[in-house]
Image (cartoon, rainbow, N blue to C red; front, side, top):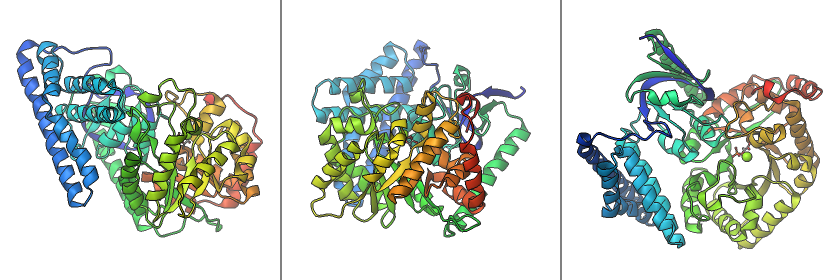
Amino acid sequence: MGEQPLRGVSAAPGVASGKAVVLDRVGAHEVRILPLDSRAAELDQARHALEVVATEMEHIASGLRDAGRNEEADIVETGVLMAGDPELFARVESLVMKSGRPAGDALREAADESAQELAQLGDSLFAERADDVRSLGRRAAARANGYEPGVISGVIIASTLGPADVAELAMNAKGVALAGGGVTAHAAIVARSLGVPMVVGLGGDVLDVGDGEEVVLDGDDGVLFRYPDRARIAAARAEADRRHAARQSAVVHRLEPAQTKDGHRLHVLANATSVAEIVEALAQGAEGVGLLRTELLYLDARGWPTEAQHASFLKLILASLAGHVATVRLLDFGGDKTPPFLKGAEHRGIELLLDSPDALKTQLGAIVAAGADTKLRILIPMVTSPDQVRAVHEVLGSVLRGRPAPQVGAMIETPEAARRAGEIADVSDFLSIGTNDLTQLVLGLDREHSKSAPVTDVRVLRLIDATVRAGRAAGIPVDVCGEAASDERAMPILVGLGVDELSVAAARVGEVRKWVRGLDFAACRDSSRALLLDQPADAAGKGV
Ligand code: PEP
Ligand code: MG
């Protein structure tokens, strides 16, 4: 059979060849019913998946106990009990035997039903357990569909995935191909951060790919090839080897400063959500973390995270950043990062947090306690006014209890913030430009489904320029932590506009540092100035 290309949109660069691991065998609206004679075997598969997950969790819990982390071990052990819960299994049994649902779907649906019942009890402790049951269902479903954690070496195919799913499932995968999704959605950001090639928007046909079928995923051009010929497979492998070599070279050059040819020094930090990303970023020479997205962990949450939940995540992450810059962003819920308990909320980012001052205080207290050994900075998302920064300072003051105050920075990612950058800079210790939201908001695009992110549109560049000038006037550094900082075309323009720090996808730290060393700062400045004189064009026509 000849090659069959399925075309989508590039969401994370890189090329991968391997066997397809199909997580959603059927389209979102299609329900697969198993024939009667195959249901008993399917139920055995579901039972086995639950046993495998229970064993995995036992291992994780005993590892935590050995490391003296009893509190976390207790939490993981409740997952072991849930996996053996007879009520959960009775639901799975009914879904498989009576309704003919495949094992993976039955596990996910049964867990969702149990979770919903727990959540309806209205107690916050039960609500947390509900999230755990859901996560257990997802894990078991993945095992039933043939996915083994840590040894998956294929190309994941699914209808859509959330950012947390990508973080968990794609860590060791060769690539991700989605029927839906958008390039600027957070799932794509996590894939880029992990260095996993990703193509989105492939349409329902991609779900017809057979489990175990050999495919080539071209994350640069946004294509998935079915039945790839030998030359395509060989080229994909050669490209993967080239990227591997580039990563090795980044590690070798990690101690060389990120300095342009004419001596202009920049700071390159990493965006991260997991310890794995931080370890990778530091190995490639990152000077710390410029954006720790804290909200991605809580996208299934039924209530605001508790201090213990914040602490267990932050302690682990910040321990890996001792002595380094650790920029912890406050919970940025809203848009494609809205957990169930906030569905329908009017505000997002800091405005939403200020509506729940206890939640803000709880998170600030946990950050300050966990970040004592780092060069701690706190970053405020979706700022629109200097009063919001003042409000955070005030709450922060109430949790310090004699400890040194961390720096507090404002994200400039709304047009309002860019217009008021001077006032915001006056009450901030640093500014961080979020080009992802800024671009979408300035140009009126839909972030979750958008097929391009034209940050080089002059309307966006002028706001970035105004922000850098405001930072200069206030004598504070200006960082860019949006995706544009790791884009080969956009990054020199940002440098030319005078930003001081670039916070980039963890997997790209070495590459960005290398690009900086190849730049001429004076030339970048001239080109960026010239670009600011452009007339606004149709946003859709200019893609970065
Ligand atoms: C941004 O908007 O550019 C940003 C860095 O924040 P996030 O992508 O998490 O919304
Ligand atoms: Mg943002």
